[in-house]
Length: 181
Image (cartoon, rainbow, N blue to C red; front, side, top):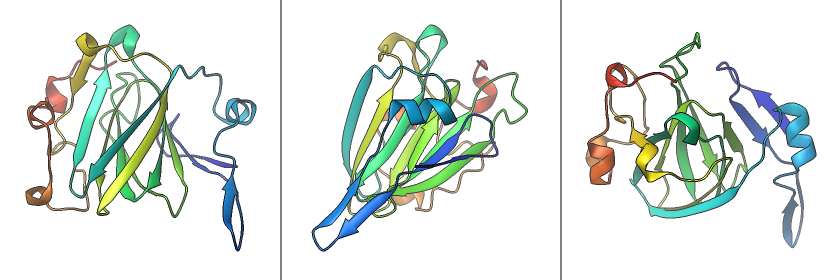
């Protein structure tokens, strides 16, 4: 696997090797020892999966305090634009974001440490999105950063009129109203 740390410290793009032939391909998508050698210690406790249609935007979600989560995300069907926003108060990149296209074709994975808001929008007709987390989901600790906050300047690569959002995601908070981690 190839591990590439991004300009925001602690955020990584991981490219698993694929071995293909006429039957298709084989890829090792996670190996704890190799992950910890590059990224650092982690103990994932849960795997999640979502299936969504084109235009669905999920996020930008985060959990506060002791329930904060690190995530390792990938797409096994379709294509998404995945976004992580730095909410760590002591970070020189606070309020900055990284966006990466994840797809079944490119096989890329995105590691997002604790202290970030995270979301994605589906660019293909459908997408199956999978992710590991290092902490359990705690509904009472969850919050949402508004996906279209002008302070973030995120280009979602799809017009807002085509997006499908939950009521929770439509009502997200602005960056200026969030207490940093």
